[in-house]
Length: 215
Image 1 (cartoon, helix red, strand yellow):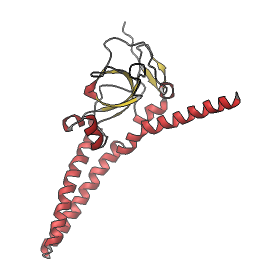
Image 2 (tube, one colour):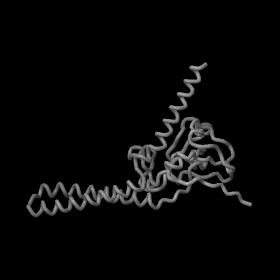
Image 3 (spheres, helix red, strand yellow):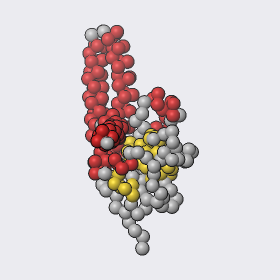
Image 4 (cartoon, one colour):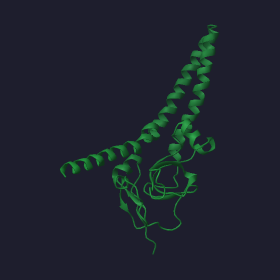
């Protein structure tokens, strides 16, 4: 019996560790608004340096070196623009959904709860191709969703574009069935949405949502 208890506790610890890694993975990848801004600034500085080196190469008639520098500048200009867009996205993003809010997938119909968000799609090109997320849909908020395993048994989590989700028309007071729910949320509020733990709110730098009651 003691061994059974130990094994159960160990399994819970492993699940907590797994959830923490998954919830923070994309945050670490993009490193937040400050890092995005720093990235854009770093690329601008690198561009200035390359352009200065290009002028020097042309002046000393090093045309092969100039050609290589032009290629570097062209590539860096594209990266700089992308970095500037990311920085602006982090600064100005407005999310339609919040941590703990219940949602439904418009196409597939499964229920879920928001456990993370990004201002734009932060997945790889390979993932986007597989998920059929094309360029025009990447520049919108994306959400990490814990999926109700009763409505979608084959999928515990999903990364979903904002335009693919909708909130319930009426308060959804039915609990979701998911093994990680109570590692990330305290329980449900009076509207049926989940209350994020302090650790989860800190990861995304959001204040606790205060439920309002209409008179």
